[in-house]
Image (cartoon, rainbow, N blue to C red; front, top):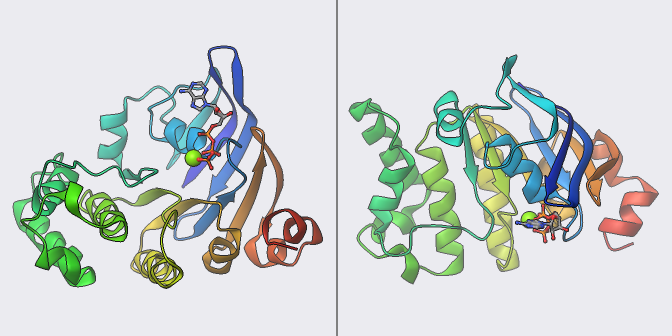
Length: 234
Ligand SMILES: Nc1ncnc2c1ncn2[C@@H]1O[C@H](COP(=O)(O)OP(=O)(O)OP(=O)(O)O)[C@@H](O)[C@H]1O
Ligand SMILES: [Mg+2]
């Protein structure tokens, strides 16, 4: 479904992604794990069109999307849950969710999806009129996921959804991710929480300073000595 083909991405003189290639099969969960500053967010931002690779290309359902602007990419079915739960703080929960569907015109389907989001996250229904900026961190993460779902994506890019959440909520978020996938959405999940990410993913890539250094089935990486040492706390 998604193929990143040898991309190089720069921030000025900084070479942030080096000949990076990665594939996401339709229906799967793929995780990209790596330390701070490895290039995970840069990878997602390049897929969503916010950054342009200098070389290489990105294919989505066999179409070259390398030079397509971000709003068109959303229209093609790729939506992102950004790092640090960027919700619109001065808009209500409801308005944030509506923003997620801003490219859509199918009013009935939008209302149905809104109902789905509310039933998946009852906390958001209770707080639909509350300003998003006053939600707790965990609630904002749920809202960020709900907002991405409102675009009805076929591919969802998630940037560290577990960051800063208490262990119980981390578990809940991961089980929600799994459920979203089981309902038909393909997922590219960026995480530092390698343990949890590998436990729900089909396939995994390890990135270090802009390069993929390891890849394989998630189960295999979980058992790899290299990954255990560097990312799973021994
Ligand atoms: N706007 C920018 N200008 C210059 N350098 C940047 C910019 N954004 C990111 N970088 C650099 O690119 C590298 C990759 O950053 P990136 O945000 O992709 O890392 P990450 O893997 O998402 O890290 P983290 O886990 O901390 O979020 C880092 O060295 C970072 O300092
Ligand atoms: Mg990041």
